[in-house]
Image (cartoon, rainbow, N blue to C red):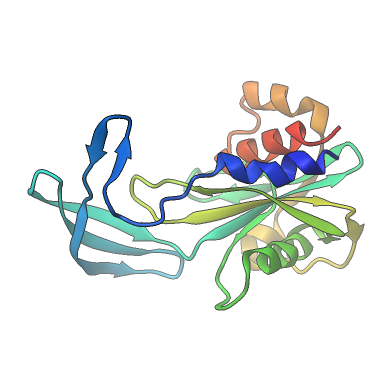
Length: 206
């Protein structure tokens, strides 16, 4: 395990600290200013808002925004294998091969605690070590979902605790880490968070 590489991964991530103008080269990027938002749909997973924004050219535009509590995803390594799940996804209307993941739906729970909990619930593994590899917006063009991606090592089996009908019908799949690149190119892994997570993990495993 190249832990130094994992620790240094944070230098790749540059999150905006505010909406203040900033410079990119010789150009000044002016901010978009939120004016107001109206709730259009309040669901159990996401809420849909209509937002009004003032643009840098002083126009007012309307955008539809989906608000999400955020999520975690985990790449559990056992030996030279990634423990994945094959789960039905209604939006895609198919079973997808994915790494374990879950939404941050417990108030006050840290991302790392959520990752530990989801790993136990979905695949019955307790991580001896959990390393944050990356943070990212899933689909920032319309949704504010923000995810934390972890690498789980020194995993030991425990009793799982699956939640919901999809997880009840979920299959656990062991995938050789050496095979993930070909599985992605063959479109057998087409879930974005899983592609990101396992390719990052592949870089940091000796």
